[in-house]
Length: 402
Ligand SMILES: Cc1cc2nc3c(=O)[nH]c(=O)nc-3n(C[C@H](O)[C@H](O)[C@H](O)COP(=O)(O)O)c2cc1C
Image (tube, rainbow, N blue to C red; front, side):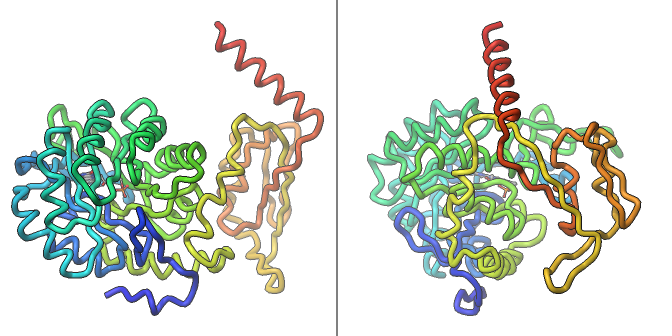
């Protein structure tokens, strides 16, 4: 059982929609929230709140198979909503999860009529918040209107990057009274082929699945940061998609989120990994100089530019470990050489060379360095950089008019 009092680093408690959470990890709606037992396990592992599998007017029957791994860190699935009847959620699963001390978010899908039928009963059963999820953005806004009229508890809207502009939809939800936003749901449709058996890995119609896990994280971060930048006073944003470690969680906080969903990590590595992620988070935040999750929230947003920025990189290279500075030195792995698309970099350890006539300042070589021995600093813009930047902007405008 996770005990926040045993953490020795930064404070990882946070607040979401006015409710205090002991950790910023929220079990996202999915198979681990199939019922009270799964939700309680996630709570005990350290999740600050747990979301039920999506409740609809009738129970789901799933195609077989409906979950497959995609590499080691991502999944494809065509799992439908909860396979329990909604009455069972009201009478047993939600009350039992509440009795175990968890903060419970009832996921309600997928139509305004279903919101009308389910929201009040989920609240009566003890849910602390409602999360609305729908297949189309057209149905999400009427669901929100219905839920806000019926609920006295906070209402969260879950966004999907399958829609043309999820961040814009999120802002529309805020205008219409959403208390919280979750971005994003799994993305698709996608297809995985099982080459041994020459058929789709999943049995959904047309082999369709939806992708989650690590592959989703950069997409989700972009949507979350766009919402956080456009609505700087709104703090009830939780990122969902590919949070596999404390490091990933910090990315979400720096992009403006107060909490972060966990789903695929719990399936792939076991939900008990959340306990380790809580400890790692407390230590990592402290190491980075943030006393709490709240202190790290949104710190990267001012550096996300509104326009393309052109400048140059200044590389530094530390071939040898140095116990005084903490430098780990070069391991001669040569990833920096391999990754250079332009053949600009060569390493004859301990001598590193870069040919400035070939280097395009892309930064990939320093990004893949596992020890930090190769480091790229972004230089302040020179007059020449500003000229090239203006040239780029002019070309963009010209292309738009074509
Ligand atoms: C097998 C599976 C089932 C899911 N079922 C639901 C669901 O019933 N309702 C829902 O809102 N999201 C559902 N999701 C989406 C997750 O809640 C989450 O938003 C998404 O997987 C991205 O997070 P992750 O990368 O941490 O998994 C499901 C995801 C998976 C992998």
